[in-house]
Length: 247
Length: 247
DNA sequence: CGACCTGTTGAACTCCGTCAAGGCGTGTGG
DNA sequence: CCACACGCCTTGACGGAGTTCAACAGGTCG
Image (cartoon, rainbow over all chains, first blue to last red; front, top):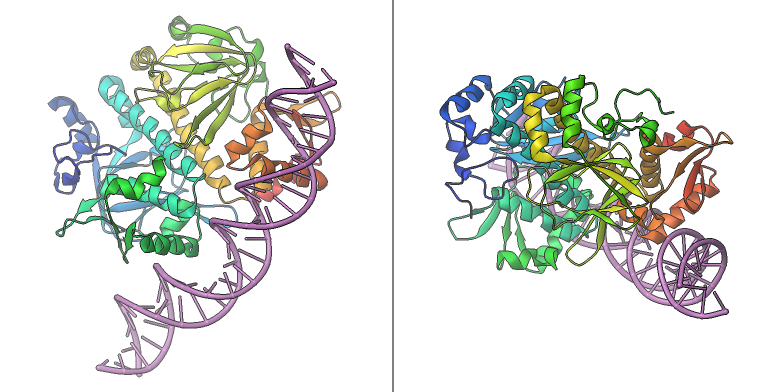
């Protein structure tokens, strides 16, 4: 499970530090491993924002891109829509992850960022981050790394998921979610809490809500998961549940 | 059509400079708009590689990530495979576009880069690019912009494409290809040459070759395209062909 | 020439989307 | 407190788009 003393809790790191909720120093979300002066330079840039209530926008598509945002606590979905209004959900992001980076190099954000629950955010004005990168090569490297990770993340989820059936697609999603957000509860069960609706998950996976619902029922019948309202429990050995993904 | 005097021919720019084949200065692919000294600094990093023949690898998944590559001429596909061997094609890249950037921040490349025809490449050792970014903030900005564009490109093609039928998915692909590589031939026809097989296109679109073939036949019947062996001709007004994508 | 690769076409099947109905939990108002 | 509405999820039946399997056409290259 999560290594609580992980030295890095940046986006999509598998063993993210779950203590981040409690971490008073936002620097842990970015710029970790820097010396004191450098960390302070970053801290000076940060503007704390929140709380955002469920359904509130952190930024909108139309907004000019100025900042990237580190989620301090809570969870966020990035959504947009096709020209005919069909909703798209590009991803779900949790504490110690960065959003807004997909707009880097553009004038506007590409999607709406909507809080899924009460959420606190750190705003990082990107032009200042860029300037600081010149002074702190390590920070430049970290930002480049984050962007690279985001590209790879899309490739390993969306691109890969296209070739999978509905239930495997969900398992791929669940596997990722478990790595980032999974917990072992009081009974020793491996569970993932879902701050988003199943409808949102369906959209994100490119499925209809009915199709996802059927996939979940099927996986429950097969004894792979237990499908609760806002929680998925992973039955058997974790590697069993996800084994079909790595045949 | 292509603006031949375009000041920028970096990845996914809509009006890419088609003269790049003939451009003797690789700097046009990256670091454009820099002063003479800065351009020279970049030129010093570049190692020219090639020619790669069709089917030859420019890099492989297992290779340690050291460099990004600018395509000087020719075309390249990025491919990997699922654990069961199912092939995935992440994209096709042409002259003046960058490959390998999806590995930034990782130790290895994420996919194989395979030449589709005789191809010349400029290799840019990435640690040196990173160092140079510290000295040339404009270059840092350009690299960040390129990475951001790559994320957005995936969102606007793969993610969007998931919600489209086979024929519309192909039209979305064709529209992109026409922007990047389209030409008007001697007869005044709008055509796109295809360096890749239709099988490769199908894989890239998440379809079976048979399904793509049927979609192409259907689009030809409807008078939208003319489906040739290694060339697609766009019939009617260009906006007609692609209008269904922007309803 | 025949082997091979690529692309096309046909027929049967499968999975997911669509439409429709209903269940469940929550919140609101009488 | 119950009635009701509402959002979210589930289930069923049906249809359609894409897959699968198979056969074959056309081009290229030995």
